[in-house]
Length: 253
Image (cartoon, rainbow, N blue to C red; front, side):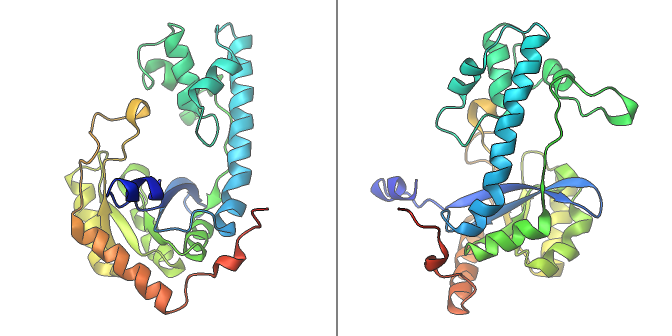
């Protein structure tokens, strides 16, 4: 992607979003990594086992849905995931949509099938528990890969109170502008950014056909100042030797 961008005169920032967990509060939390070395061993060691588990879980989910009478196939779902890192819930819902069971990816059927079973309710037949990495481990992996760790959409998962602990682990930014953030969320994220000296980021969280919101690509722009701040911190890390040498990479042979 970076090379393709260069050919077209577009700067591409290599990044990652890690689905992590706040073990102290028992809730999900997402960590972004900007300007990462995407091939770094710290990220592959952290993420590859999780990707493999999620892919296998989706295979089992499709089997359960087929056993329950839904007319979809694993091969069909795999086609929708072609070119990605594995099969996810959205690809399963895509197959159900094409097969006429729903008119939307996210909606009543999604909520029914993938319900976590909160408040004593029975979990949906397509729900399987997912393993998450500790948020502090995610931050460390991003740092080791030369990236800038940022807390993603804290308003969505109620992550604001974890900020002091995450900053102690190396968090350097917080996502202020996001489609799922209201004005109160933006104000709180901005306040925490000021208090802890965090870079304020944002974006549309654009997922195209698989997106949960109607926001378009390029909306929720945090401004060029955010990019400049990320670049400046990246340069500072390099000067201070924070970035681990590329020799730490796994062999490509």
